[in-house]
Image (cartoon, rainbow, N blue to C red):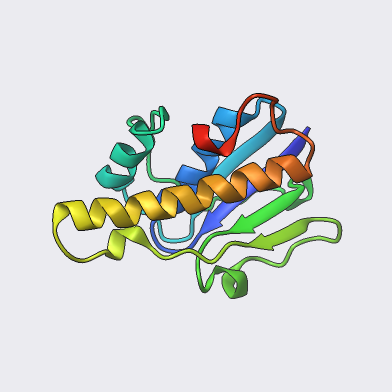
Amino acid sequence: MKRILFLCTGNSCRSQMAEHLARKFSECIAVTSAGTDPQDVHPLAVSVMEERGVDMSSAKSKALEPQDLTEVDMVITLCGDAQESCPVLPPGVQRRHWPLNDPARAQGTQEEKMEVFRQVRDQICERVRKMLEELHDFPSGKQSGNC
């Protein structure tokens, strides 16, 4: 079973969105997420994930706690500067960088902020879908339209 860590600096809503989407589409990978300076999961992240049938209502803030990185197969950073601040990884651990805007910093009306969260959610969904296809673990019948 592949083990994947989604890592985000700042709040952990992007990494948790990725974790929950990966779990929705695959039971054949072990997925976790963390933020290096986590905050409570943003309520708009919970709302936009509910629009896609993913319940994050009980998600809690996750800090990066010490763990044996030799048990991780892939670390995916989801923030602009996380690639530089990610811990040194042992040989063999795949590293991917998905630079995404922080939707928690969105400005404007409630609907404008929701749209930013939707855009980030959809970007994460597409990247998770492609990653699972590359790992040959994308269930048949679940297309990106189901994200």
